[in-house]
Length: 292
Ligand SMILES: Cc1cc2nc3c(=O)[nH]c(=O)nc-3n(C[C@H](O)[C@H](O)[C@H](O)COP(=O)(O)OP(=O)(O)OC[C@H]3O[C@@H](n4cnc5c(N)ncnc54)[C@H](O)[C@@H]3O)c2cc1C
Image 1: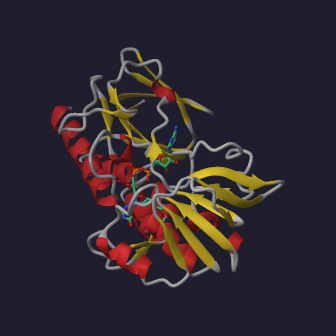
Image 2: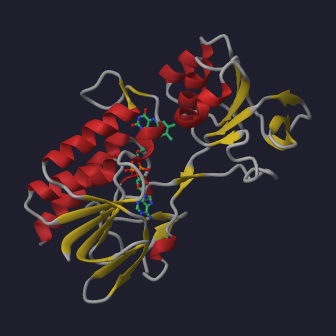
């Protein structure tokens, strides 16, 4: 039994953990992977205040070392369901925990393109993380699907490893100016606007794609960066208001269910960044401190 359980140790969950612990509130973080969340998929971060340039892995490590130094416990396990009796009961693959408050900080999973063969080609040409898988495509031709900050970050990372990088953009680029300029200055990034992937060309592995204008491009890797959606299956037994699959909260990060908070990328909001995730975490923790 603890006062508060945080599900997920991305920047949102780690920030909430730090603020709760420093407020003297008994807290436990449950994380299914390695602390860091999506930061671990990010090559270089230049917009987190205090670091002019830092790798996602290093920032994740600094955050997890900081919360560990304050004694915030992190358990490595996957939360499978949350139910509400007198308290919340948080069930994991290996155990069960009770808490007065639950903070959901699970981020979101990458959206799929929905093209036939996509799941069969996972790790055989299709990937959702350039930092994780880019090295497998050294000196080869690859493509990135997407036109936002994440897609351009992926394309820039791959352009240093791969021979040619096609950037397949549904309409137009909608990333920050600084990233657009960098991409345009890279000779081996080819931007194809108004472009959709209609079909994969593959046998055992991906060999290429057919685009909506009928053109074929030969690539061995396709990196999909078109956003994400939270997987809220573990909340099925609770009634929590959502909008387009994201948890709705008030300014204190409280969901529609008393005692359940949502922070970071899982929350229905406008801007999905590390700094906004960290801010959400601090607000949720301070709100819980105020209430308890
Ligand atoms: C390629 C890429 C580049 C980016 N670049 C930048 C950038 O330069 N600057 C910037 O500010 N932002 C960037 N972002 C966005 C930023 O990384 C996210 O907004 C931020 O990480 C969200 O934090 P979070 O804590 O809400 O979620 P996440 O970072 O997604 O963390 C969620 C954590 O919850 C865990 N989890 C999920 N489900 C469960 C479960 N059932 N049980 C236990 N644990 C669970 C996951 O393992 C994960 O560790 C980038 C994102 C991507 C994909």
